Image (cartoon, rainbow, N blue to C red):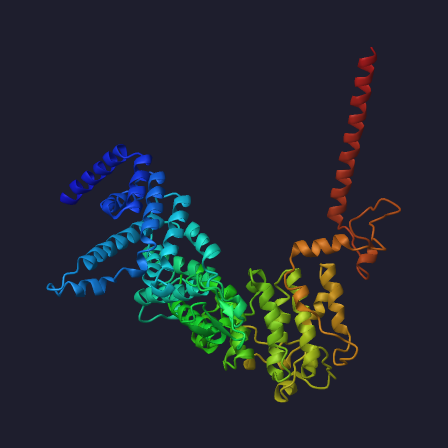
Length: 603
């Protein structure tokens, strides 16, 4: 009961203070504090107005006065550790030191109040922006113009653990401050410290989709979401090798200039510190790498997991100090299957082609991803482009190229027309790159071998497809013993675009001088809408018309079924005669009724 009573008394006291002190009184308190040290007791009173429950005008006026008061004093204030150790020597009591120690405690109280307003749900966005700017001004007031990492870490820690929406705060940070290299540097450090405290000891891939990641505690899930929003908004450390791109927030008074003697060195106007652009780039990349690796070890919710995989290959991997550190994360993601594997393919392909990653089961996993559902996936366009790139190597074994060609060919029986167009393009490129699998297009059967002989000689049995569609291992699919008969059936496809495009496979693709590869990118994002739009834009010279010189007497003509004749049976003929008599009587009665009606009307 005591906390409730004290809390109620505190609110009543705040209301009385607000009624007692008007805005002009707050301004007067600030002017007195800045004018003379004799009014130092105004400092605690002004601190009481720095609270989310105070009127915004009172908060702004108090913040401006206190900021003007503390700005020249902060660099000379002792730290809490040195202040506490000085009190041990009671014989050496220095009034000035006691005064500065008291100011230090009030400054820390001021910073805590400012951070509380930034993460408060009761404060307006405009007030939060003003308070955030005040905090960032104090951040660059360290000794010698250094970065006050303690204040900044407290700010980031409060933002991550706050229960409110942080998008407006992040918008201000990203627009105003994340562009400075020291702010980015210490943001990575602060996030890494936070993630180290919530990082689980073990994390398995099975927990990503529908497991622990999907059922994460609400507080932990919200924390991970906020960390992701912060780390995603920080600009990547690209271009830091150029000295002209280096800006420092704490160095706003450090007029960063190029040295005439060494064009790769940066030096402050005080001359107390010289850093080369290469060393700055190396340090920021190291912190960038540590922060991202710590983040990827967290139990990411499924929506965050997918979003990270979308931009990982273009926004993260190129800026890592050592890209091979992502091997475990990407291989684990690739082994999950489904849409997660599809989205991890881009990053894994970059590590394999550009960073020397060896992944023996890569093509087996890629083959397992070929399912009809992939043609409905959101990121199918990028997947088909990567699939075409992965099958471009001339060192690909014939059985593997044949397995992919046959698997794609079989899927034409169950995919939409846009998927058939992509498959034709992929098979076209496979046949052109790997002449050893052209046997799938044309197989001759001399008719001499019987079915039993074909089994003994391990040949293709006429009328039997040896392909094992359900087999996940490409080497066991028997793809080289079959043919691409499914592609041949596309010549009679109901969609004109498919039937026209499949004719490109009729040419001899082994003659490279006369053929070119098809750009899969042009067709990978097709749909019913794009196909319909292309057909509407086509200029057709001859249009088929359903025109008859005489009214047809039947649904089908005899020429539609050559060799067949359609005759009614005896019972059916009698029924037809009866129906004909009924129709005749009905017509007669209808005519008589109409005639009688006309006579009645005339009379």
